[in-house]
Length: 539
Image 1: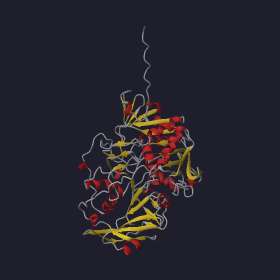
Image 2 (image 1 turned 30 degrees about the horizontal axis):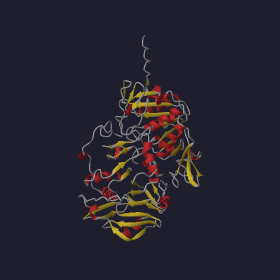
Image 3 (image 1 turned 90 degrees about the vertical axis):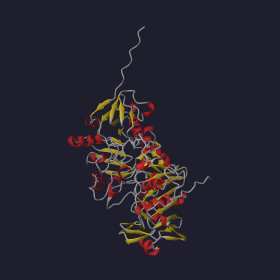
Image 4 (image 1 turned 90 degrees about the horizontal axis):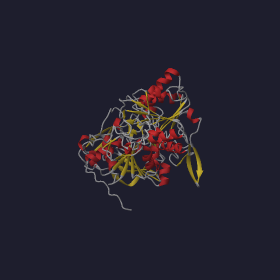
């Protein structure tokens, strides 16, 4: 008896970027997996922008970006498609950002000109919406964002007048409580990225710094009859990727675009330490340096306990892991960041969002589930403004919009965090002198950070007090706690005059603790300051 011949192996379509984007119809809802340049399918987005410039199609797209697509340093991302007529609506957790001295990205120009309806939606909620769309459920019911700019009682996520015309969130009662409801938005196209695709379209991520949300985004598009385009660095023979290394299976992928020169992350072609292919020696990491930002980061580090799982945000707090390394305490806490890294050393500046020597990389949607449920011990974040109620703005400065990226995961992270330590300068632009363990203000800053009312409520101090969260604001000259009675100064830097340098430089009233303490003078010395982490309680 002759044996039947085997079925030929089904092969994925390998297309040029231009051929792939030709499959995207007018009016499509396009979801893009990216975090700045990390995981950005830039070649496909560039082709999409070229197609519209040449043909006028596809028109009137809605795009979903759980985290920013592209940066201001060579990977254009969303700016490729920031063209009137191409983009009708954009929902993004964050947007490309950079210093005010750089030209504004095209997407910010469109937002300001009201030529695209733009919404800033917390990253975790956007990931949740993809999961709901994939399962064909009606939407996301959440408390994340109550009493912030997400709340329809404020802006309802709208970034401009064009967006304000159409609500994407509403407040509703459920089971005797108040919730926010985001109706499902089903993507019809997903543009994702990986390192390798085999001949059957299975995708692996061995050179990537994070999985981000590619799997959930592909599921959402596939289950709604849509198109999934995967940009990859290289191709492999079918079946050559180990099953446990396949993150997105080929059954979810329609076509593959090969872009061998894709950047690993911002200003980084490829670093095997970021993708966990090797472990960097501890002495290969730069120390925190010396200056006022380091002083603040040192004081923040004193809030940590052995064994804590600690979320870390961009800004001054990103220096805290380097402080611990300098103090010989690397590994005493586990860092967790929204792009998915668990453990290791979170990287700085352009590589922020990646970690070297990570213990694990979780898909971002699951990291956000961890954050939204408050499973971690503390979060170290920055502030631009703080008001009389302890509300914080990190997401919008109308005078300089592209200096801020939007909220990203900030709202998800802070909603139920047990403890939050916000860090920043008390005023913007002040000049300092540090000598003999004391601080002197040489020239006061022109812009005050403590204000009667923040421009944009990214974090609600009122809800934090009601929920019993522990909130602290660490600056170079004092430490302030959020109490039911208001903002209270609990520590002051050596050399600082309370009335002249603190109370008189705040545009909102500050209470003063009866047992006002002095910040440790060792913080203001360039030598190691002898950090001793608190022990965790066993309650």
